[in-house]
Image (cartoon, rainbow, N blue to C red; front, side, top):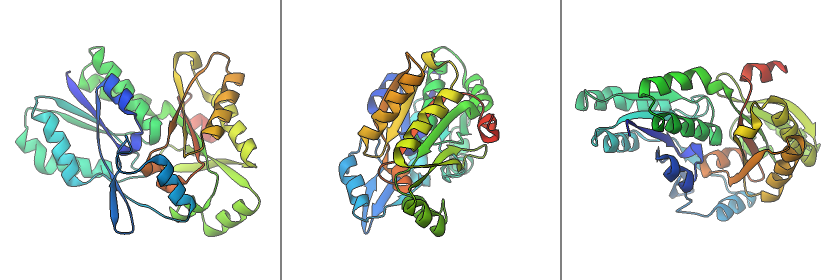
Length: 297
């Protein structure tokens, strides 16, 4: 390999995908009371069912971005093998990990590995949107593209990697500071469901509100069909926070609206899941520029 592609725990890439595309990742952590868990993409410390059931029972997890030490160790592992690095970071609008990575590079690694190159890219998205960017980077690398060519393409095209999501309960977004307490109360009372996207700065933004759970799931499918490009040449990823039934509703509706579409379901990882809560559904795909979605075009 001409360079290593590295991401982090918010990318939600399965072991199968990471092995297929030779993608590595830096682990974050999350905690409950006095117990700390690794934010493993393979759920090594706790199962998804245990995690989301504990949230349903009222538990609240705290999440920790990638630490300075973790970045230093992971980057050195690859640099010591003579590899350059392309790090695809979680959106800076949601995590400070990309800034920590840049500090590690400037304070420690540039002097120790003066002949190696490390590029950090703020993906401006999380989940399998971020993961999809890492997959594209690995594909370009394996096609013979250089680190600079790959990084330039991603910077030019990262806002075409899109997400649509909806939550079952607004309390988790309230706790994470994403909605006000009054909005959460009245939203839950009247079963109002927000449709969330990642905006141009990488923040999660509600662009639409619909009444009822089923309507929100259908809306995810409808907006995917509206804004996706080349749908038959890509996999549409549907993440769920321990609600496979709802994810299948979205998948079936997408396939009804886009005959021949390919979808893949997965469980949303603990870092994203801790903020959005059980029952959340998120759709990721490559489509039209986010600016068009924000303008409603």
